[in-house]
Length: 91
Image 1: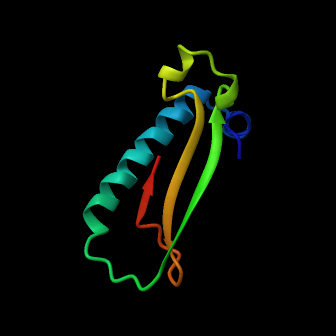
Image 2: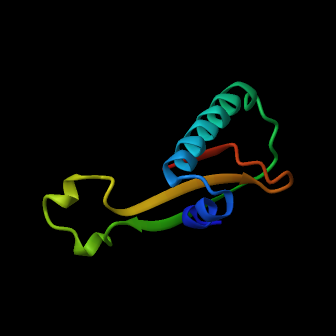
């Protein structure tokens, strides 16, 4: 569900929803740091997702190229073949 759709469905301002998503993400990160230790995984598959923020890399000006939050973005992650657990990811 998109952010705008959620604001219509739940009748809550989008800033409130975004703040809640950040809090939930931080709590999930805390839980993962504690519980995801000494995993016994047999086979990991590594993949990547590509997207861009604001502009594609080829359209950036020289000053925009210095800002790493603009342009091509990659999310690389590992997933366990059997359990579908995602023990590692990097942005």
